[in-house]
Length: 198
Image (cartoon, rainbow, N blue to C red; front, side):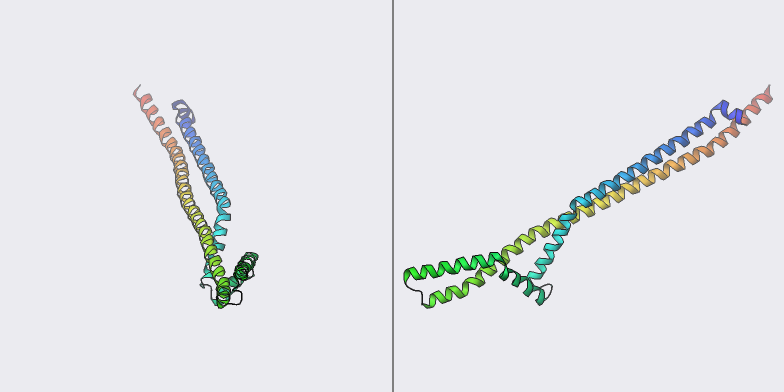
């Protein structure tokens, strides 16, 4: 039977099909590894933006009281103690006092009113500016997280397709191997019939 198989090429065809299936399966495995490598690189690249966005969003929540009154008070106190707030209020209050001193109204009620309103206005302005800046970072983080999720879904789809290709290749090789036995048996029967008709 081995001689007939060699003579008809069925064995060689089966081995070639099996080698082809192995090659295709190995190529799919390399594709899967590359997909995973690329996804991991993307996650690493976007990770600082996702993390920064999460932190910014948390700070936004604290500023508007969504993390409770203690967190909100702590966030506001952080502004009041910040160097920028201290510098702006010092400069602003000095400007108010200098202007009133120059005009002779230093002891008037308007000066006291202006001074009492100045710090809350500066604080409110700084909080609004910071909230807007944090919103920008939150948006970047959200976009980066969405990009990671999209890439993850695409990677999953690509890997699933490559696994399906790998399975089809292996199954094709196994079917080809089974066909060799059937083909060889058919060749033996054909040769026997041909020999019998002589």
